[in-house]
Structures are given as structure tokens and as C-alpha cells.
Image (cartoon, chains in turn blue, orange):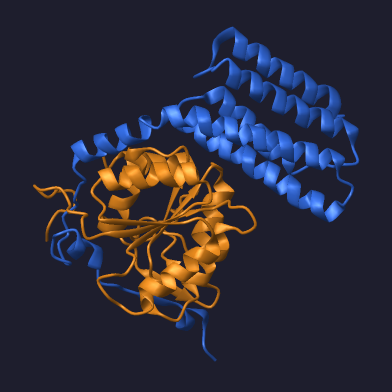
Length: 169
Length: 189
């Protein structure tokens, strides 16, 4: 009878990536990426912040129209797909916002994405919660609230928190 | 024996590297591509879907050649499909130049479940978004400098899930908390 360890194999591979990076395959020293190149790479990310504004607006418009479709649609199967789209848009906003330090917008995107897991289209309270998310996201966008956002951000967080608390029960 | 902590005097030349970014959001894949290109990566391909990625991998990696994709950056959550589907497909492939492909899973979810799930599906490294140049370079360096051997077991095929292989001392070293793994990457800097 064979035992479990007979079926487990450890496979050693040659490190061809080292060779591609310009050092011998068996070289045990660690390497590094040119710090100036890393700086340039980060600058290329930071330089896209202007496009972020445009991109987020586009995704917010899609979020709005998908939400309208969900509200007006009675087909359960189709709604499931639309809710997945809504979740993906919210997740896109989170990704983009956090990349450029728009923490408030990122947290709203994350909260909506997570709420999409529980949306019951037959539950009107859930409609209010989703709408509250979309509303605060638009306000955060229009006021271009960056980082933590100060008192205005706190108000928006509170607004959303109250809507979730009131309509979650 | 060489001390691995000792570093090379010259930075890695990544101009021969070919990297595939699988990401549905064009804005994010665009950010990654330009950052990777500035970092010196020679060729960057982008696939917006799992099926497109499979086609690309089959066309570039079916046989071993210098044109092979060397590293894959895979978004975990994509519309319609899941990064896990591609990861499982790659690790189950019969071709060596596909099934051993180093995979960096990228996700907006920072959770222990994500790390465990991706690790148990055969990912090499995990990167939690937001994307930054430092995070990308740390993962690429890790894949080049610290490749783990592969384990082939009845229910698993992928890089050794233990991040450090040392003499067993009774402690579980399979790190799964994202912040714990992030600390490890930061030590590379």
C-alpha cells in the first residue's frame, strides 16, 4: 500500500528568470530593480490622476444607469447579472480612487461592492441603501474630496452610515 | 556558499522580460502597463478577460521559447469569471512552459481568505490593490530571486505554500495575513 508521502513530489526548477535578468541561473545573490526606474514608474501612475477624474465620472454614470435598470427590471436572472455589473463598477471605483488617495470615494466603492453581495431586489430598504451609496459617491466626486476629506467627508460617511443603520433592520 | 542577502552591484535588466497583465478594467491595466514599462520590462501584454488570456498563453507558451510569457499578473475579481479559473487552468495544464508560469494574484480584497484561496490554487505571490510601483517591483523581484520549488500532490499543484522552508520547529509558517506578507516584501527595499 502506498502512503501519502509517496504521492507528494517536490519539483525543483531551474531559475531561468535570473538568466533573463542578466545573471547566471545558479547565482544566489539577490538582485534589485533600478530605484530610478521605480520612481519613474510611480510618476507614470501619479501622472494619470487627471484621467482618474474622467474615468470615475464615466463609471459613476454606468453605475447610475445599471441601478436604474435593476429598479425597472422584473426578471430575476437578468437582475442577478446587473447586480454583478453594479458590484464590478463599485469595485472599479474603489481600485481607481485608492490608487490616487481618494480614500473616501474608495471606502464608498468598497461598501457598495460588499453590499451587492446581499442585495435583495424585493426588499425596498435595500433600494434605499444602494441609492444612498450612489448619492454620496456623486457628492464626493463633485466636491473632489481627497484623502480623508475633513468635516465634509465625515458628514457624508455619517449620512451613509445612518441610511445603512436605519434600513438594514 | 554565497550569502543571498548580498546584492548584485548592477540592477536587473528586465528588457527581455515578457509579462501578461490579466485585468478587466482598462484604466487599471493601463496604469500597470505604463509603470511596468518604465520599470524596464521589455514586453507587456494585456488581456481583459480570462478567455483572451488563455488564448495568449497558448499562443506564446505552448512550447518553450524566448517568446514565452515569463510572469503573469492576474486580477482575482473579474466580471463573469474569476481569476481562480485561469489559475487552476494554468496549474492543470500539461505543458511545462504553461503550468510552471509564475503568477502574481492582484486583488482589491485584503483578506486572509484571499491569500489562502489564491495560495491553495497555486499562486506564487499576492498583491493587494491599490497598485503602486513599489508593490509591483517587490513582487517581480520576489519571483525572480526567491522562486519556491513546486509541489505536486494529489490535490495540489503549485509553488510550495510555505514561504520559508526551514527545519520544522513546530510552528505553522504558512503566512496568510496580507499585512504579514506585505511586511516581508517591504524588507526587500
